[in-house]
Length: 387
Image 1 (cartoon, one colour):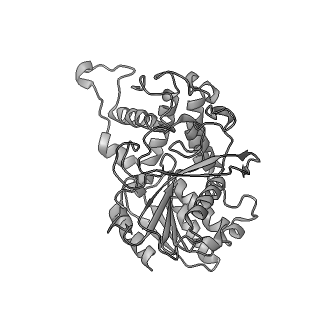
Image 2 (cartoon, helix red, strand yellow):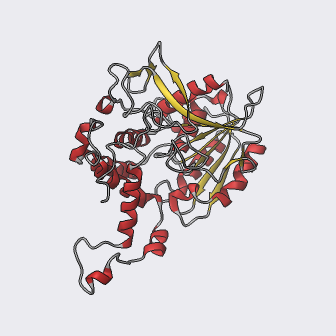
Image 3 (cartoon, rainbow, N blue to C red):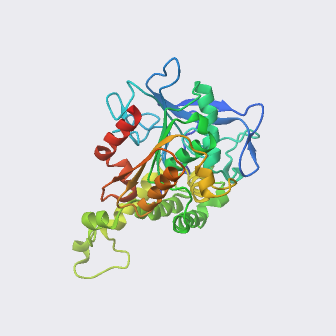
């Protein structure tokens, strides 16, 4: 690994350049109740907006980000934003989500580390990072926090709620929890309930972080650069990265090439790397520069707990609460959230008498196709918003 000089956490902290972030603070007088039974106070939600809200607030669109995303859905990298917007090719003037027409909102989820209250945030009781004190949260908690933001912005009804992967989980929860506040939904590469295999992948990543001695049980924020849980976080990300892409992409790009075959000649060393190993290490270290290990744990657990039927009886009964029109998108080569899961969403919605359409993106890129295949996503998304 090349993470020796990384800060203990890649979280955005108060005092850092805000970039395009805006901040909404709530639960100052009364706690914000979570599904776990814990209540948070003085909750901050970081968000960004694009476009202008119409006087009747009828043109508002909510984007929901995935596991390691944040509020920066569109815009360049710069002060306050270490990477370009995660949907940069989709959001903006004249783009499929046209900000000349739509008022677009994206917030960093509860438990995140880019301005929203999460494990790295100051605890209101003592000003020290929450760390191990931060509670378990759910996708439903994230959505209820976003509803507070919608109230603050004056948005009573979203014209559309869109998102991929964990973002798609939020989309479904929005439509079920607040059916009268959502006119249409576009969940991408997601599911109604996390499967055992999806949970298994997450469990491996959590274990990697927990076994890093520099994680210190979650209380590592005062550690010197290079003395935080960067190794554990990097390994967790490496595991996840394998699930984000397809076998064909790995094979076509890396094959069985070794990184330093010339130096070793015809001999082999135990730690001599294949090119694909170096690729995974790069992504593991890269994440550590902009993310927090505890947020990775908390958000990953929320994804594993995702089940729209929890506390609502049968799955069909939960999905039957939805009144929004839907376009459901799957990725042909997705091994993490296989397209059969999106077909199930579409089929169940239609069985409940709702207007739903299934669209499959043909892509070799696997789960990450929703962040790559803009040419295939552009037309259905633009048409979906306009109709």
